[in-house]
Amino acid sequence: MKKAKVVVIEDTALTLSIILKKLGGMGYDTLGFLSCEDFFPKFPSLGADIVLLDIELPGMSGLNALKKIKEKQQALPVIIITGHGTVERAVEAMKAGAYDFFTKPIDFTKLGVAVKNAVNQYILIREISEIKTKYERSRMGNIIGASPPMQTLYQIIKNVSMSKATVFITGESGTGKELVALAIHGEGPRKNKPFIPLNCAALPKDLMESELFGHEKGAFTGATARKIGCCELADGGTLLLDEICDMEYGLQAKLLRFLQQQKFLRVGGEKFIEVNVRIIAATNKDPLEEIKSGGLREDLYYRLNVVPIHVPPLRERREDIPLLAMSFLKSMSEKNNKKFSRFSPDAIKILVACRWPGNVRELENTIERVVVLNDGAEITEKMLPGKMARQEGTAEFSGVPAKKEIIPLSIMEKDMIRKAVDICNGDLKEAAGRLGIGQATIYRKIKKYGLGK
Image 1 (cartoon, rainbow, N blue to C red):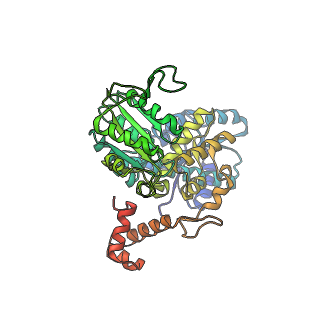
Image 2: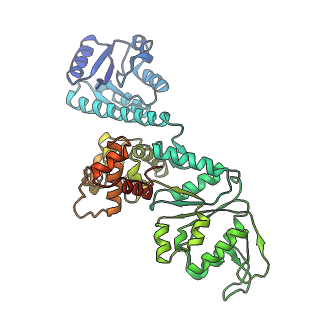
Image 3: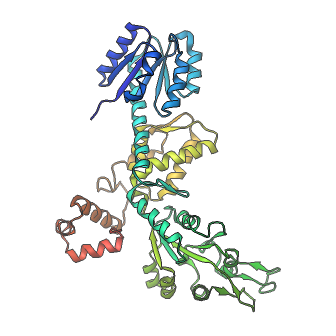
C-alpha cells in the first residue's frame, strides 16, 4: 500500500528536520518546506494527504497559507503548529478550517495519533468522492447511493418515469419506497402536478374509502361537508398507495374498477368523476404471500404490478453507507445547530458493519440521535450506541448470528446464494455445485430473491 504523504512547512531548519524524522519513523512519506513561497508552486503536484503548517512564517503567514490551501483543496487536512504565545491565532486557524493544532515543544505521540486520524479521514473523503464520480450519479431526488444496485434502480426510475404505466414498489421498511415514488413523479412529465401519498395502514378501514374517493355532505353520520378524496386531489399527478396490502379487501375491488376506468363515485355520490391519475403502489410485505392468505386481491395485484420495482435493503448496498451517513450528518448538524463535519474511520467501519434491520430510516435516526446527544467536530466510535460496536463482524459478515439474534432463513439463504455467485464470478453451475443444490434450484432461487437484476 502506498505510504501517506505528509508535507511540513516550518521555517526553522532544525525543527523541520526533527518533525520530518519523527513522522518518517511512523511510516509516512515526508516532504519539508521552509516557506510558503517554496511550497505553493509545487503544491498541485505533491499529492499531499496532510499538511503540517507553522503559523509563524516569513512572508506569507500560516493563517493566510491555510486559507489558500483550503481554497485549492477544501478537504485536505491541515494541522497548525504554534508557539505558546500564538494560541489565540491557532484557535482562529481552527475556525478557518484547520483540523487540529499543536504547541511547541510538540508531543509527537499525540501528533502521531492526530496525523493518523486526519489522514484516514481524508482517505475516506476521497473514497466517497471517487464513488460519486465513478458512477453516472450518486443520488436521484432525495435517494442517495452510488452502488451498482442503486445505478440499476436509477435507470429503472428514469425509464418508467416517462411512461404512464402503473408501478408496484416492494422493499423492506425503511428502504425509501416513498422516495422512489417521489423520484418517479419528479423525473416525469407530471412533476409540476400533485403528488399525493396515502398510507393504507394508517387509517381505520371505515374511513379509507372516504379518504380515497371522498364523500358527499350527509353521506354518513358526521359527514357535515363534502370531502375531496386523494384520487381527486391527485388529478393530473401521482397517487401513492403505500402499504397497499393493508387496504380493506372489499375496497380493493372499487380501486380495481377505478384503475380500469379512471373514474369513481364519492361516497354518497351519484355522479361519476373522471380524473387522470398515475397510480404507484408500495408494500413492505410479500404480495404473493398476501394473495395466498387472502389479504390482497390477485386481479388487483396484476393490475398494479405492470412495472415492479424492488428497493434493495441497506445490507445489500453497504458501500452507500458512508455517503448516506455524511449526508445525514450534514443535515442533522444544521438542523440541531451542531458543528459535526466528519466521522472517525473507526466510526465509519462500525456503521458499515452493522446489519441495519431498519435500513436507511434506522441509519438516519441513529445519526440524528448521536448528533443531538454529543458535541464536537467528529463523530467517534464512543459516541455510537453501544450495541452497534457489538454488531460489527456478526451476522452477514461472519455468517454467525450475534447472541440472541435470530436471522430469518430466507435472508440467510439469499445472502449465501449471492455470496456463492460472487465467489464463482457469476458461474451458476459452479455456485450450485458448491452449495450442494441443483442448477434448476439456484435459477429458481435467484429469480425468487431478485438476485439476477
